[in-house]
Image (tube, rainbow, N blue to C red; front, side):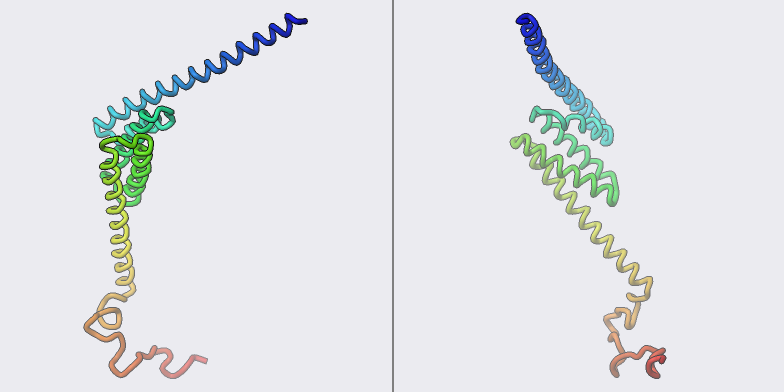
Length: 182
């Protein structure tokens, strides 16, 4: 009976040892994978292939090593910021905003990252620039819409040289000059 307990105890001990060793092995594999993704992402960045770089660098985000994770976030932010320069409209703004998130995370993981603050500032400026462009585009669209209804062309529609109504007072609506229709 004692040998049975001893055998079960040894199996449990070995199982626990293998599971701890297994977790350490899996963590090592994850870090090696993150490093491979980091290298491949940096290679894609150097080629100017922003989409491939972003895809590779996303593989570094699961790293538990702050240096690898910080570099991954920083380089992913650069890839997204660069792709925002080539994109237009909502897509450009989306890439710039995501770049901002990754550059902030890179600085959180590696506060002393030399180009980190500079690139974060560039991303902030890009987001502001794209947001202002969206406002200008919205203003132009609103003006186009108002013009399509004739609300920006001469006279009552907004000509600053003419008053909005005749000098004698309020303009009457032609259909209601003789009173209500009932």
